[in-house]
Length: 302
Image (cartoon, helix red, strand yellow):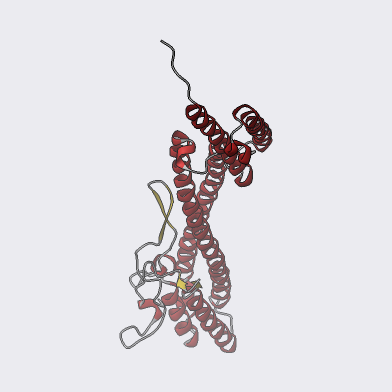
């Protein structure tokens, strides 16, 4: 038994086909105007899942890159001020060697003592170095100035800096401590080679003309200089590690961005060809429907 095809059925089918062609054209126009082949989740559900995953990875990677930049800045600045402190230690050793000979006149010892006092002030300034408003030698108490005197702390050699570490997450489950405690670098109150204690003893000995005491401090100066150099070397090693991680994060960003582009970005030349084809098909469908159906609605659409 044959199926009776009515004009209404033909009209509805024609409109459905025309709407489908129009929707195809609209999707292709969206792709060509946005440059994306996924403009809504329904365009490619599987691709959308991958796209969201890649975006999350890129956001995470961007945060790690920011952290590595901050860590690198902190380490580079620490290296700079530690280098300045090392230069001062070299000068302190030169002056102490000169004063320890026992042949320097009292006027010369006074001049050396005065220079040592100025060098001590420079070391205090270095100990209070700040980067973006944070004191780099006071651990997690970075908002507090470490080397300052008070009623309870009357000598810089008695300053107790915070031992906590400023850390940055530089990759998944990897955190790097970038701060150095002032007590580790300059010496704690119990260290005989505490640089401030050494300078205080040197100036006192020079003011009294005690060359033997001055000479005995040379070992403490060398000991502290060695520890400062070791701390600076550790900063350099961490800087190298951060640079390697930073390079890896840049490579990762490039790789994930490429994957994201493969999923999201449209091939514009291909889309333009498809758009032209869809427009041709749509126009042909309109004309054919208008000539076959001879319906006013179809004529209007054409």
